[in-house]
Length: 153
Image (cartoon, rainbow, N blue to C red; front, side, top):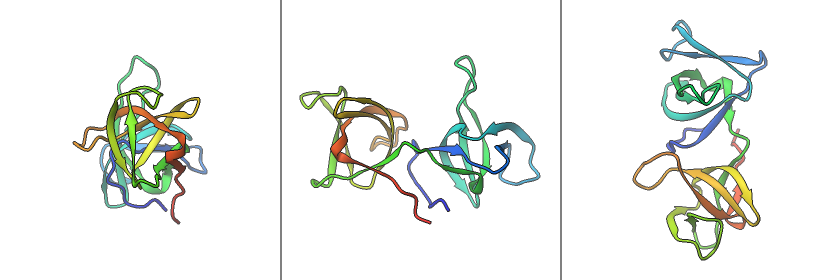
């Protein structure tokens, strides 16, 4: 079961027994199928509509655009590289480079969900929402400030 999330840059992946899920035009099972997404296909969360998530499915190649549509919440799970900010200070500084002396570009409170996209020594590159609501900001956090997020069932 996926809990209600307000963060925009949270990523999900398709996870079904059938090996695929339908991305639909509207939030119902009778709606036109826009695209079939294979298991582990990545998407970003936009908003919820009942038991359906409006998402942006990542393109199949670098020449295509993201495809927006609806997918039933039972057919997805959080991206396996989802982490939560967990610092004794109650927040973590996000830096523009993987170094302690690098400029701080944001401050994320404990409990904020982020997606890890790379590791540079003790620093992890993350994707996050900025406080002004802008999705898809990128920066670096020391790995000691993050812990693996476990979905609550």
